Amino acid sequence: MYKLHGTWIPAYVKQYFSAGMSSSQRAESVHAFFKRYCSKSNSLMDFVTRFNRALAHLRHEELVADHGDLNEKPNIKLGMPMENQMVGMYTKKYFYKFQKELLESNSYMVNVTGEDDNCWIYKIQKFDANSRVRTLVHDKISNLLKWSCRLFDFEGISCKHMLAFFRVKQIMQLPKEYIMR
Image (tube, rainbow, N blue to C red; front, side, top):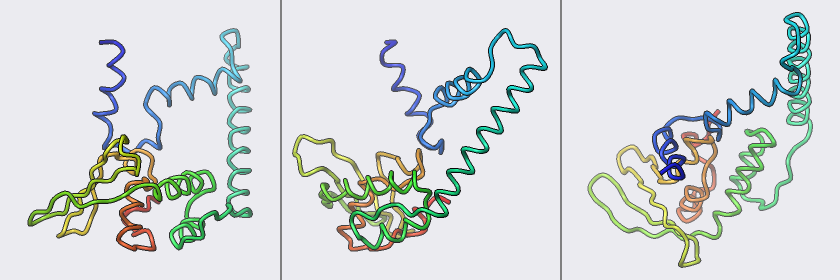
């Protein structure tokens, strides 16, 4: 049962945006940050000095990343309109994640599996028959999509399944509803 507990939490927090990090990863990240600069043997005054130095270092790293985002454009690999659209919207780090999803979306097929008065239901699967099947629901009234992998909700970038749907429907620009600012 202990081995299975790791699968329970993600099911309960899927609807919350967390930039791809679980709560334990965030805590571990903070602990690692403090361990680099502080130890148990530090006095309170030494801790404050080291903490301020750590914050200054962190701010400097953010400025360097911002400078890179402003002055260096990521490499365009596919030349697709959607890729060109997103190169100017995302940071380099997130653009490369998006680009990876866009590239992988080309190996997925999209098939309608059902329809009712309110929505169309699609099956999205890799061309490999043994791959996992994902479900995408296209609401006819709101024209919005819901998909089973929830990558957009969890990390804020469009998933390969959604991008495969857009490719098949010949939607060349990513709709604004699927761009997290």
